[in-house]
Amino acid sequence: MNFVVIGADHRMQNSECGFEALLRAFLNQRYLLPLEAIAEEYHERLGRSMAQDLAEERGLRWFNLDMTPGEKFKAGILENQFSRSISQENVATRMSSDELREEIWANKLTNSCSGTTIVICGYFHFESLVKKLRQKGHVVDKRVYLETVPEIRHG
Image (cartoon, rainbow, N blue to C red; front, side):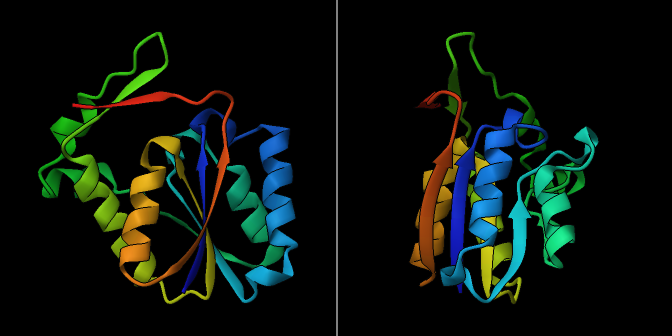
């Protein structure tokens, strides 16, 4: 399978016109064929994302890549995930549970039975997810769309 993984700033997933233009440009690329799905790390409490709307508009399958709180609880990582802090200086700390979460995402993507999938995740998870997908033998194209590049610390 082929993946285009976009490491994004979550604040832009709902309404940022540049991010929408980037997604539309990818949807028009011939090299992505057969493009079948858009997978997104997305907090559905925020309403619909631009990627959901574009997937519907283009007749593509959209699915949420992230684990539900129930799935995180069952995996034993809910408390660890909720303890993450991001400082005022735009520094985020990776939690011990992030590796498991990203491995679950990679498995979900691998089992999605899709041709080419555009994958949108927070920049925080970007490199790790790309690495995991490549280790599973997939072709991965990397892209980033950020307002600023955050510093990531390992906790």
